[in-house]
Amino acid sequence: MLQIALWKRVLIWSALAAGLIFSTPNLFYERVERHNDAAAEIEALGATPEREADLALWPNWMPSSLVNLGLDLRGGAHLLAEVQVADVYEGRMDGLWPEVRDALRDQRAAVGSVRRQPSPPDELRVRISEPAGLAVALETVRGLARPVATLTGVGASDIEVAGDGDEIIVRLSEAERQATDDRTIQQSLEIIRRRVDEVGTREPTIQRQGEDRVLIQVPGIGSADELKALIGTTAQLTFHPVVGRTGEAGGDLGAGNLLLPSMDEPGVFYIVERTPVVTGEELVDAQPAFDQNGRPAVNFRFNPTGARKFGDYTAENIGSPFAIVLDDEVVSAPVIQSHIPGGSGIITGSFSVEESTNLAVLLRAGALPAELVFLEERTIGPELGQDSIDAGRIAALVAFVAVMVFMAASYGLFGLFANLALILNVAMMFGLLSVIGATLTLPGIAGIVLTIGMAVDANVLVFERIREELKTAKGPARAIELGYEKALSAIVDANITTFITAGILFALGSGPVRGFAITLGLGILTSVFTAIFVTRLLIVLWFERRRPRTIEV
Image (tube, rainbow, N blue to C red; front, side, top):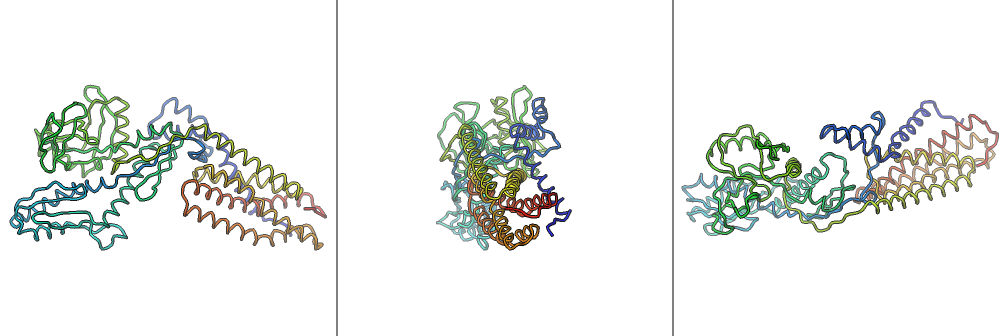
């Protein structure tokens, strides 16, 4: 008999209700978006009357998930940046020098005195005063090597050590360079994400392209320059011992030293040791504040490791100056007056309130491990996005109306049932897109339009099969039941192959291709559900009410 169990009916209606409820916020997009932004800002930054007013625009008991609009629909900024991964090699060599120096000093009887020599950025050259002890020195430095921490680098060491007369040459191994490049790109991606979306409401697209490039797309931001201002600086905070102060840019600095300009004193330069005492990587917090004179400043706090280093250095160097360096400029160089325990301090300088706030954001996000060189930048205006939305809406409506007219003309009342299921299908698709937080792009709209056309395929198969069964003089109830049973295998086969194609597009594609794959895949799921279960439920309800002796499909 043509019937559906009560528990199945409850599940079908529940699924439809959930789809409609979760898709509803998209009908009030601007209000819900302001509500969501206000909720995130209140949680991160605190409540204000304006944020409370925006929060009240949408009921808290209603779902508030939205389909995110992509860059091509909403407008925003697009950047393509190249990460200067070679910069990291120099930092690794600088960080390795204290270990090499201390290890060789333990072998002083054999190697004599140790002095660092000028070298390329990706090398560390060390001269020993006793060339006869070169073999001992090489063995000692090789003992500092560590295994490469990647699957592709199993069995390899992170450094290569060679000798040249009385010099030791240390380089990163090829496996370690590859691992370092991968870590640098991944770290850059995460830090860029923190900087451009600290509150978590912008939905940026930040992904790796090729070996050393990063694609950054942020919908809703004013311009590419505004985006570059957020991510265009490394915000590298370090603390260095001060060797001297000078008013000249040249002169002999000595091996292992740097000449850095003062940020607040034009024409003044500081000679500092190249290797920092503490780095910004050991920062755990930075907040805008005011100093004792009421001028804008930034409070900072180190993690336990950084706090110990900072405390030990200040305890051992009371009366000596040390430099607070931000992006290769000396912010200040105070004299250590006393031991500073606890790992906290304050950065003062010629800051405005806005500059101190931005600096705190950059420091909290962390330092970029390498410089970014911007190769491509575009600002996409919201007018272009609105044009795309309007064009997509028109295309979807035309497709929707054309399909509904065809179904009604071809299958009569059964076609109207299919049209109602089609409307519910689109609502469920938007509900799923909202729940998973998917980003809708122009190719995504194309996927929705394609889904609208494909959604009735299953109904066409069922209805044609019912027509065939009616020709064999079976009763209407049995014809409907057999129509669904015999068409099921063809429906499942056709949609599984399309779903596999969508999965491959998602796995191998990127950006807009993935957006198309997501809407196509979700559309297949919802269309199969509505075609097999929803239209059948509608037909059963009609049949139970009317009990027709004959039907026409």
